Amino acid sequence: MEVEEFQIAGPLLITPKAHADARGFFVERFKKDFFDRLLPNVNFVQDNFSLSAAGVLRGIHYQYDLPQGKLVTCLNGKIFDVAVDIRKDSKTFGQHVGKILSGDLPQWLWVPAGFAHGFCVIGNEPADVLYKVNVPYGPQGEGGIVWNDVDLKIPWPIQNPSLSPKDEVLQSFANYSKAPKF
Image (cartoon, rainbow, N blue to C red; front, side):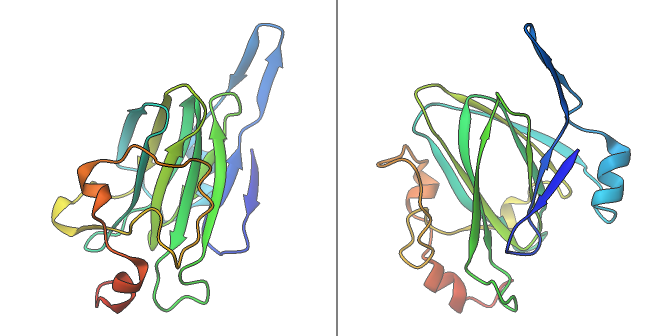
């Protein structure tokens, strides 16, 4: 597996080796021993799966009581996946990384604790997204930042996305910055 780092410390893009021929490809998407070496203090405890229609945007979410790391992959379709640094003591606070993940190219995006996460489905097909987490979901400690925040300037590749009612009313990054949590 190949590992690519970003200018923001923490997130990683992991590309497993694909064995391809005219029939398609075979890939080992997750190898526990590899990830134990790459992320030695991370113990994945749950797999989450979402099916999202074309034009859906989910996020930008985080957990403040039990910060959660996510290992995200797209099994089918195509997404633009984003990790935003929300660690208030970080030199890269408020910066983000974004990567297109596709079922045609098996990759993982590691979104460590201390980062908010969101993705949108691009193209005309739905997307199947699988992510491993190191802490279970905790609804009492969830938070979020509005997807089109003017300070974050995320270059989402879609306009007028389909949002959940909860995601439509998330706070601004400026309000998040003033809050005592994280």
